[in-house]
Image (cartoon, rainbow, N blue to C red; front, side):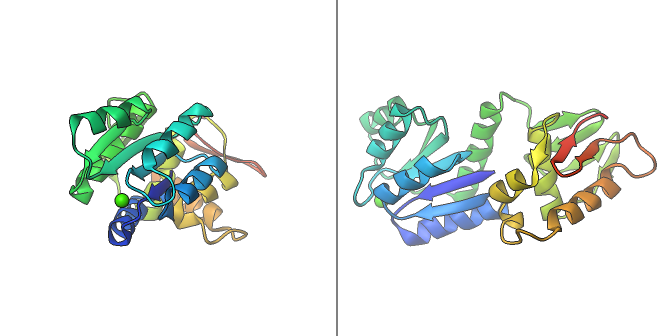
Length: 223
Ligand code: CA
């Protein structure tokens, strides 16, 4: 998943970005509205965390411009503006959710997860692919009734593939959306982690779920 954090108060921006990276997001950061708008124009973000009181260009204006050109990225506003009129203005400008400062970072993460569930039209936090169950809230993974222990990196990769189950996911998709795989372009780190995942989710001769299309990418789903 790819996230953009537009917030001019650096300590808060850093805390949000770090928390999102901890959840496996690839995160870009910006401290002003103009630059934030520029980032949003150039990249398909899964989620944008947007402050309203920003230097150079107000967050509401950033959002209006995005929606005016048809940008469908999910936007969560975080702001100290807490009047009803402010919240309405934010939501009516096309925000998906609104969080008033001060807030606890775990709540922000929960809101982001809920928002992305809605985005993928799912109420159930558990992704199910055949007998594989991935709980996106607790990160518990099971195949049938067997628990599968995954590292953070393996989990992040599996969830990314599961959200696109049945679709071809390229290495470039993975590199551009997942922080953990971002800095090692050109290496075979993705293949290595696909190998780890396959060993864990297809152990004991269970039916295959993870297919490699040589030279193209990977598909998670019943073979
Ligand atoms: Ca601000």
